[in-house]
Image (tube, rainbow, N blue to C red; front, side, top):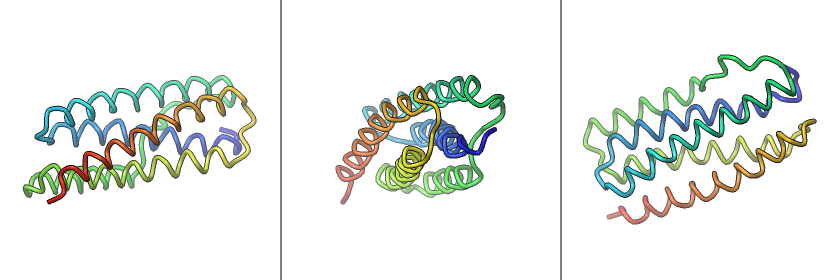
Length: 147
């Protein structure tokens, strides 16, 4: 893959992490509204990653096996451990917000970089708006569970 697209590849990896992370955390959440949001957000992340992968394939060549990151896997394992220790929704939502911070950072860095494809840049910009709104919603859910 061309070096110009390495930042976009990082976004795809973070999206795959988010897809798995939202699903994993969603399965442990007690609040049905928050649980439904997390499971839906998992699907959004998967679609966002697929959309970017398709455009990267057109613009830069093969993008098979982008997958997630090792950091994301560790983050999900930490979230699972917190859940198994009875951390509750607040603790899980704190973990999710940390993941959302990573997603926001990946989008910011990609959009600050030199992306030669206008289509990819447009997709990233549109997705970034959703990612920011999702972050804010996760933060609001977290704040509502604070004791």
